[in-house]
Amino acid sequence: MNTLRHFELLEDLNPFGNAKATLLKWNGEKYVRTNEEIEIFEFLGTFGVRRNRGLALHSDESKKWEAVGGMQEPAESWMPFM
Image (tube, rainbow, N blue to C red; front, side, top):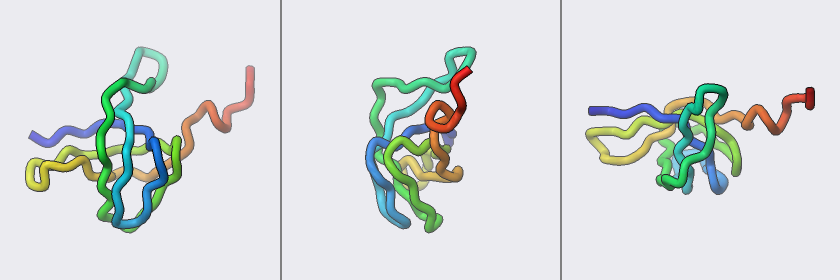
């Protein structure tokens, strides 16, 4: 069964490369970091930098976490303080 999860990069991710990331979970208000580290593989030609967030699919075929969603900065890095 394929699993789709949100993640946050722990290091830069180059196109067609791989990087360490942490899985995120929804706490009822926002996505927060877990202690579960994974390795993300990028096959679409996109890139991300440390702290970017995206979506990854755990592929039954490759047995790897594959980046499938666009990388974006976490909201707290650009949201104005209220």
